Structure formats: C-alpha cells, structure tokens
Image (tube, rainbow over all chains, first blue to last red):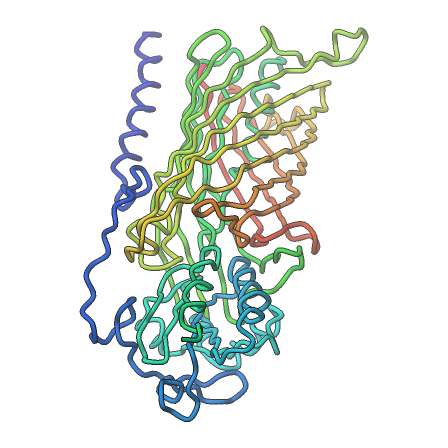
Length: 196
Length: 327
C-alpha cells in the first residue's frame, strides 16, 4: 500500500511534466533556434516590415500638431533624414528605452534632421496620452508623442511594447524590431545620416 | 500540538508568506514557480495556490514611482499546482507549475489571455535529522536551527516574447532556463518562528530568432544573475474555541528583496533590463485538526513608497491556497 502511495507521487510529477511539455506555443522557449526564418520582402511592397515601403500615415501629437509621414520624405518641405517610431505603453522598460533615445540617440544625431515619434498605442485619446506622457516624465523630451486610438499605426507596424521602427527619407522601412540595446538603431541612423 | 506539526505549519505559512516571484504579465513576463517543501516526517505534499496580482504603477530605473496610464486596470491571476515527494531520509524533490491569466484593460485596449507559466523543478536537502523546535531556550543546543539547502531549475514552459505571441499581453513566462541555489534557515521557539531564506540564480544564454511572433535576425541574449532574500516572523496559536478545537493558526509577516542584474544581448549590456524589488507581506495559515491540511491566506505589497523597486511594476498580491501533507 505504501509502495503504491509513493509511486502515486511520482506519477503526479510525471503527469505535471507531460502537461507542461505539451503546452501550446512554447516550443521556441524550450528549444530555442538560431535559424534565420525571416521571409523574403518584395522591394516596393507597402507594409511595415524592413524593406517595405511604409504606407503614409498621419497622427496628431500631444502638442496639437499633425505629423504626416509624407511631409518628411525626400523632396518635401519638411524633408528629414529619418523618422524613428517607438511604441510605448509607459512601462518601466519603455521608460528606459525612451531615456536612451532622448539622452543618447537624440544627442548623437542632434545635428541631423530626424523625427522621433513615440506612439502610445494603449491610451486611446490624446488627453490620456498627454497625461501619461506628463506622469512618466517625457513632457518636453524631444519626442513627438501621439496616441493611436484606432490602432492604425500599431496595425501597420505590428507594434507592441518596445517596437522600434526607422523609416528613411525614401519612405523605406529600414528597421522594425524590439529596441534591445539601441545599438541597431544607432547603426542604422549612422548609415542614413552619413555624408556621401 | 507536536513540534512536527508546527514545522509543517510553518512550511505551509512560508509558502504563502513568500509567494512565487512572479513577474508582470503585461510587460516583463509571467509567473515562475516557488518550491514546495515536505515536512521532515512527511512523505509527500500537494498544494494548490491561487493568486491575484494587481498592478499599481511602476518604479523606473531611478526608483521613482509612476502611475499607470489613465484608464488602465491591470491584473494577473495565477493558479499554481505544487507537488513534493520525499526521495530519501534527507532528500525531497518538487515540481511547481503555474497557470497564468493576464487581464489588462487600457483605455484603448482590453486584453485577456492565459497560458502555462514557467515551471520549477526543485530538489531539497535537509541538513537536520529531527525538527529543532523548542518551547524555551535553556541550553546552547536549543538555538540550533533547521536548515534546508535547495537547488532549482526554472523551465520556460510559459509563453515568452520570443515565442508564438502577438503582443506583450500574451506573455506568461520569461523564456529562459534558470538554475537556482537556495538556503532556508528556520528556528521556532514556540510560539515564535523566524525564517531566513535566500537564493541565487543563473540564467542560461539562449538564441532568439523572433520577437512577439515576428521573425528577426537571430541574436543571443542572457538575462542577469538573480539574488533574493527574505525574512519572516511567525506567531502560532492553538485555537481555543470549541468549533476550532485542535486547529492551529499561524500569522506570518515577511520582508523580501529580489534583485536581478542587467541582461546582455550579443554581449552588449541591456540597460533596460535588471531590476530590484522589495515587498512586505502578511499571511495566515490554518492547520486542520488532523494536521495534514492547511489553508493559507496572504497579501504582499511592493508599493509602500518610492524606492522600493527599480525598473519593475509595483504590485499587490492577494493569495489563497490549500495544502495537503501525506504522512
């Protein structure tokens, strides 16, 4: 009898392991891969992935200005070297990323014409976004901050916490990935702002 | 009540007083399990713990507290199954498996997702041959504590940002294996108990080839080492009323600290990672007449004041659990 009871415990342990092992959507965590599985991007195709042509968009910022991407492309009145978009949910990680952009990236490229647009994809209204921006300490930070009430930009760029997008002056998406350490962002901006 | 039962009760109390070091589901990862310990005279133990973790702003890297965005209501619900089995006179093994529900409402987005959290496998060595509880200290030997040494392996059975997910709301795990070494020292001079525990953890490096469901150029990432420690003080009552005759109640207050070093991505320091979190907790545990069932109720908060955290959400955790020991 004791033998059976002791074995019951082991079976419960085993069952738990099996349940855990069969959990859906965790294979990449249990068995990480270093294979590059990115799909081919057709040049000129409109979309939010690197290599795509970014669709035009317009957002209203907390300064009550309207930012239209097309106005900042080559040959337009407000032509810029690049537009950096950062998706924020006003979380601790987002705060560090935005600090790094503000104090390292903006400082490094202070002589270049680059737009830094922070997109608050959760707050739903400009008033809420303005409050969150103020509470998080990013008023007058150098960021243009916009809400995304219809989740339009979030949809285009598959944005979520920390997603960082770079669009060059030709409207091509040059980067769309997590901020990580910021090194990739700086490398791409270096490339885009180099004087020929 | 026997000293053996007091030890069982204290262990049950610890389980709630120092709950699993779970993480915010909304932005930092899901729950990780805690370790269940079988009393010295026990053969096995099973526990089922439930917890509600309510988010209340966050501490930035400089330890200043900030409110969550207007209109947000963020919570994570967890159910954790724990099983521990005696493997030898002084050895025992355990498994803890959380299931996580993320329930996040923002002004523009409502999200409700669920999935397995990260599982913990544990092995514990008891350095003592018999419980060391005493009713009074009359000789030096009476000061001898009960010491547990533990090893653990966190297995990423949860869903992390590097798996099949759409956004940060789907996350129920961190995505990294972690090896832990733990030490717990407990001393009871009836009716008081003091429990000191601590541990260090090492995250294993891994390759990442997608973020939030989108494939990216592969890179490697390693989370930082972890250190945690806690101090708990418990008081035990034999309940006097007729209807609770033979039942015992222990109330435990705890202070815990957790620290994690910054991560590295392709060998470069990730300044947005790393954290520090301090929390205080209160729990009460009711032990049944037969001394084999325990009911736990607990509360833990990391939101007393600015400075209690760094780079981490501030939360309140309310927990309710039941535990059964097999003798």
